[in-house]
Image 1: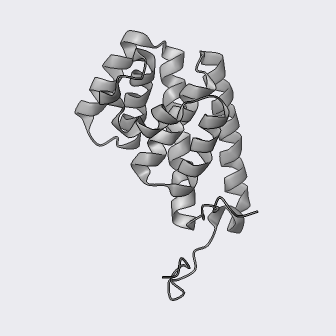
Image 2: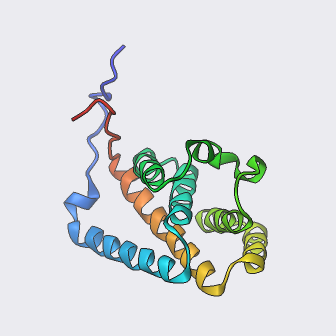
Length: 162
């Protein structure tokens, strides 16, 4: 059985390459958001947990690959990453991380007002206003990158590729 993509499938446009100006602007937003998160006291692990969880929800293979590797590089454990999809039941995440993940999920699926309210209330108990704002911006930004990669069908590099 071949692992080659279906040759009859229409070729996707890499919108980041086809229209680089908006993509570069998105990268600049991402850099500003990363700085805002650091200023608010969110460490890189917290930011990568948000990035991975939102990418899981959106089914973005490319971003999952990038941010899982980034999380591992900065010291996140394989166990916690493996259980991130079940963070509510895993018992491995701090109250602050749980609040961040709930905010990330509410930002990714904003149509449910009850989930939004619940996430916000939980966040208010353990996070500062600056941290709440930064976490939402991280989730907004990774959601945008997910859509770029999903619509472009960015490939995940095979581990044996050089």
